[in-house]
Image (tube, rainbow, N blue to C red; front, side, top):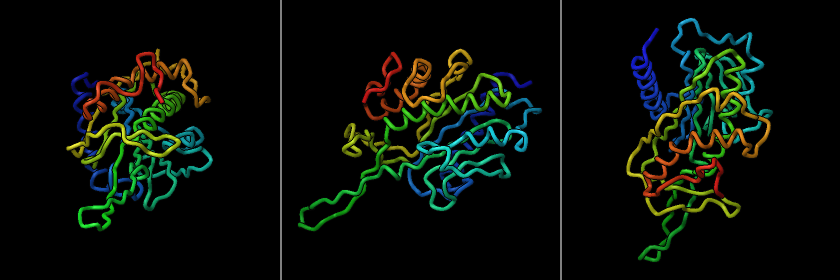
Length: 258
């Protein structure tokens, strides 16, 4: 049995290796270049050598895992060497979700979708085209809260026990700004831009008392998902702090501000 410090070391090594791999393009599908958001969900029971998900036995449940901003019917699924993969396309992809045989989940989501091309008139009266790069905070906050419910319930349905360690990271985000997606399109939340390439947010612990009664059928923030929002709030607060802002769009009550 690995002690808590040993578990932390194992997890930290895995996260750092995967972030480095993703930056270098070592992903189960060919992802678009540029900034990415990565979500890892790691069961503590991962470190039990006997824990292995049987793909054949659980394939129906594994098909419930879909990436962010994806409907179940539009997602492709297939077994792979690491376990089970959910994706839309394997070339020039925006997203994927990988379920490892030990119960670990890795979701990768490209931020390129939210880049905005802007034409500027410069001093020579010529037109210069540049790209504004955004982290779409309200979309990520909403998707994390909504999808975490289903991801963890699906793992629990396959007899993978609580607790779960939740990690949220960004890679290739140097120069990115904080953005809010609205009916008018992506708008800038503040003038600050990141001056670092990798951002790792504080770990969140998913406990049974929070996720055990989660309701995955509703897209709205239910009472249960508000509890989930409250536990991920401190991590998102740190993201906003990196841009010089005091807190995220999630209130103390677990509501998302528009």
